[in-house]
Amino acid sequence: TVSLKDRNSNLWFGHWGGGLTVYDFSRKKFVDLKSEIFTGYKKITCIAEDRSGNIFIGTEGTGVAVYKPFHELGSFSTTDSSSPPKPEMIEEEIGKKENLRGINTLFADNENRLWIGTGTGITIYDIPAKKILGSLNTSNGFPDNSIQCIIQPYGNEIWIGTENSGIIRLRKDKISFR
Image (tube, rainbow, N blue to C red; front, side):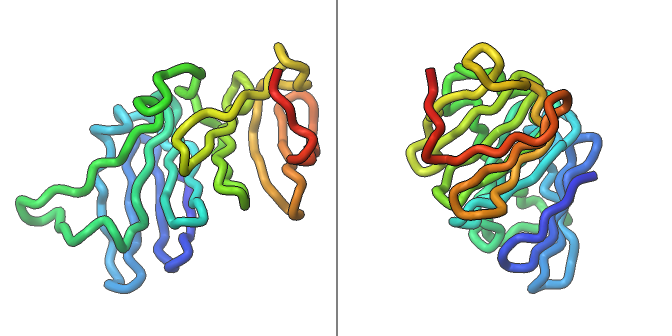
């Protein structure tokens, strides 16, 4: 299980079988988003929130899904005939140019870009423009393809934890894609 506390204090839980549950802080109740049909029952590996409140869900085998901020999802109940909202899949938007199926980590930076870490490197996605900016991997000089975690502890720096090369610190203004 992975978790995230969003800006409105809602708690998001991603589960082994692709399920996604949200604890709705304002209503003090759990909501099952019935996401398994969209995640293909694949394990949810990570959850991230961008500065607009969109929630990005990374999976072990079906890529990245995006949910609008929880307060914008509308009113629905899993006990009646209404159905939970359908996420938007990033895979469809970018034409599957990159190998974004096995997601290890997601990170939304302060410039509203989504850093997608996989076993084949990092893909950097411009959230508002809905397009890939580029990739970092061993074929273009990055030291390791197996990305485990990504954070931005200081303004212009991204720190990346890898499986085989330790921690890599990048200055965002020095990144170029070849």
